[in-house]
Every structure is written in C-alpha cells, then in structure tokens.
Amino acid sequence: MIGAVTAGFMCLGLLLANRKSISWGKYNLVLGLISSFAIWLFTVALISKSEISQQLFGTTGRNTGFLTYLAFSLLFVGCVVAANPNQLSQIPRTVFVVGTASLVYGLLQSLGLDPINWVSQFSPVFGFLGNPNFQSSLLGILGVIVFAQFFVKNLKYQSKLFVAIYLFATIFVIRETASQQGFLVLFLGIGIVIGLYVVNRNKTLGICYGALSFLGFFGVLFGTLNKGPLGSILYKDSVTYRGDYWRAGWNMTVDHPIFGVGLDNYGDWYRRSRTIEATLRRGPDTISNAAHNVYLDISSYGGFPLLIIYLALMALVVVSAIKVLRRQSDFNPSFAGLVGAWAAFQAQSIISINQIGLAIWGWVFSGLIVGYEINTRHSPLVQQSQKKGRVVAKPVESSTGSVLALFIAFVLGVLISMPPYIASVKYKSALESGNPTVVQNAAYLWPHDPSRMSQVAMTLNDNRLEAEGLNVATDAAKKFPDSFGVWATLYSMKSATADQKAQALTQMKRLDPLNPTLK
Image (cartoon, rainbow, N blue to C red; front, side, top):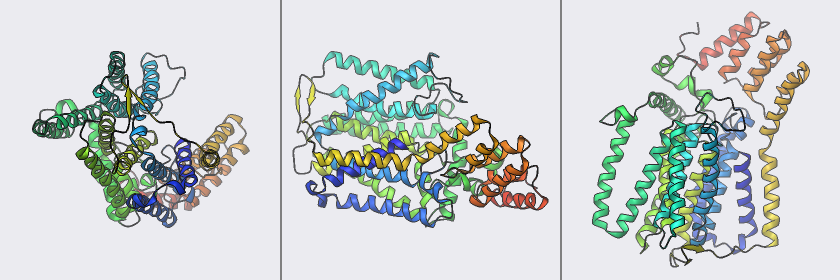
C-alpha cells in the first residue's frame, strides 16, 4: 500500500507540475470517469458507518481502502497521459526486471534456499506477494508481455534465447507454486497475442483461430466448474468455495445497491450475507474478507454506481484496444503483449482477490492502453526507430519544477500511507516488551484495528489481567460494533458480566444469523 500510494501521489505531482503543457481536452472522457470513481469512493467512505480509519486504509492484510483506490486512479491517469510509442517500448524492459526478480526469488524458495524462515500454511513458493496464487498469477501475466517479444522484428538470437529461458523459468516456478491460476492466465494471454498476430497477417485465418479459441475458452471455463471433459483436470474444491464468496458479495450488492457496505468491509458483512450452504459447507467459522472477484468486491464496497463506473472504465479499455488494432497496419508486439496481459489480468480478477501487488498492474495496463489510443490518434503509430533489434527511445525531459513536485509528492505519499505500518511495528515491539501496560496501550494505536484490539484483550485475559482485557474488549465493541470477532472476544472474557455476555451473544447472532452453534 505504501508503494502504491506513493507512486500514485508522484503521478499527481508530475501532472500538476506539467499541467500547462498537457492537452487536457482530449482526456475529458477519461477524467470524467476516473473523477466519478474517486468521488463515489469518497462518498461511500463518508456515508459508511464503519470506523473511518478502516475506510481510509482498509482492513489489515488487505489495505484496499480509499487511499489505495485513489492511488490506482492517479496511476491510471498518469499512464493515460504518459502513454506513447516510446513509453510503450519500455514496458517489456520493466517487466523483465520485475519478472526476473520474482522468478529468482521463486526459484530460491522452490529449492529451499529462502534466506527468511517464513511461517506459511501455503506452498513455500509465494514470491514477494505472500501467497502462491498471487505469485502464480503475477508470473503468468508478466510472462504474456515477455512472450510477445518473440514477434519483434530482427530480434537477436541471444534475445530470443533469453525470452525462451525466461518463459521456461516462469512455467517451472508456476508449477512449484501448486497454483494453476498462473497457467490459465499465461496461456490465455499468449493465445490472445498469437490471435492478434494471426489476424494481422490473415483475417480469414484469424477468424478461424478466434472461433477455436472461443470454444477452447468455454471448455476451460466449464472444466473449472467441474463440467465437460476437462472437469477432472481443472476442477478444484476451491471453485465451490469461491462460489460461496461470490454469492455473498452479490447479496451485499443487492441488499445495499446504492452505497454498498463500505470500503473493504466485505469481511464484516460476510457472515450476514452468506447462504446456509456456505455456513455449513466448511463450518461457520470459515470466513473470508474478500469476494475473490474484483467486480464483486467493488460492487459490494460501493453499490451499483461504483460497479457501473468501473465497468465503464474497463469498456473504455476494450474500445481503445480495438481502435488501435484496427488502424495499425503492422503487428506491434509491445501493444499486443499489453493487450494480452490486460486480458490475463481481467481473467485473474474474476476468480481472485484484488491484491495490491497484482491490481496495480491491471490499472497501469488499462491506463497505457487508453492513453496510447488517445495520444496516437493523429500521429503515426510507429514513431520509434530500431537499431539492431533494439528500440531507441527518446530521453525524457526533466525540469526543476517536475523534480520538486516529485519530491514533495513522494514525501506526502509516504507520510499519508505509513500509519498502518508504524502501528504494526509499534504493536510488535509492545508484544516483545512483555510490559502489560505497553501492550494494553498498543491496542489503541491509530489507525485502530479490531483484530489488534481483540488480540490484546485476549492476551491480557489469558495472563490474569482480566479487568484490563475486558476494558480493551469493551472499547473494541464500541469502535467496531459490526465486527463478529470483537463481540466473540468480549463474550470469552473471564470477567465479563452476565449482561455483557448476553449482549455479546445477541450481537453475534445479529452478525451471523445462520450460525447453528450460536444458541
């Protein structure tokens, strides 16, 4: 979150510093949509009854609150304005750097050579994203852009060999993650790149390829749902669990169609919105704080208005891509890779969580596609020279104002996004101190966190400091009245009165009405 927010503010700083040299008129539609998205996010945050810090920073471990989505929006606009043929040629290089770093770390983890002894219930191969599913998807998405480099004209043999080695390493690490998401998005994106190449060379052949790809897509789709000949290969129990999360997210949207349940508040509402089948399938205590579908996350957070605006932004990306592809006379590997990677990200976003390390790529790709279409409308699409198979880009001009704006925006972004991290560090230090007073005070660190307050209350309660633990639990219930975990903590306090336990049980029933264990 710190990285995303800082990058977003730096984009804002550059835009403001160069506002007089930007032709804002051609971006009216983009600015209208992204402004509507940000304004509705702000409106939801104000109207929501949840604790303001939770709306601002998001829940612990997700951090997809107002600040993060604002950063995504700023990055989107920055990419729209900056997108041009020279900038587009830099994307593969950036992907090579990020992808290689992720691959090397993934290889170290797969060989048991990780220098950090992480504690994880998942596959040990999770890269820098904390979860093998995210690592798998990231490598798959980036691998699409790398694959597209095979089509670069006059590409040296050594470069082709490097691309081949990179893709081989990608497939190996994805396999080691034990997550098939990466394979699905990688092959989907590669299929799109090949399809765009075929269409550019022969439209009739491209139509045939598209028809076969269409059938293949639905074959894979039905297979993941345990239907058709691919069901035994592609289906996993997790698909059924995702269905439970999707239905809960849709119920939140339908029940709160205008303003949703609040930013990053899916977890507080999941128990109330899930079906009885979901409650009993793996037990009432198996829950989720994300819909495992970006579109349902957004609709549950901000209702149908926020979803419609987001869908309009994605539709704009599709239309922009089609416009560029229709007017280009030759195949552009960089743009084709960008489109394939964007489609791969969208496929991943339908079945997974809006994890910041992945989501930032989706917003950047979207902005680049839209901006490339706008910024190349009245100029040749190929404004780049090639020398010995390598693109020679024009140097970016800098100014004192831009440098100063970048510095100020960097500092501001860091300061605004740091509080959750600082609170986490202080909390860890408090626990290590062993001082009950310090631990109790750590429960009230800002931004307030229901899980931290519950943990402190239980820690005090289990160490014969029942009165102190009860005070923290009571305060937590006042700050987070819609947190099931907080009320469960209060109910378990040794010194809680009969009235407090009765109140806690009533609230737990309200928040989890289908739970058969609450009597």
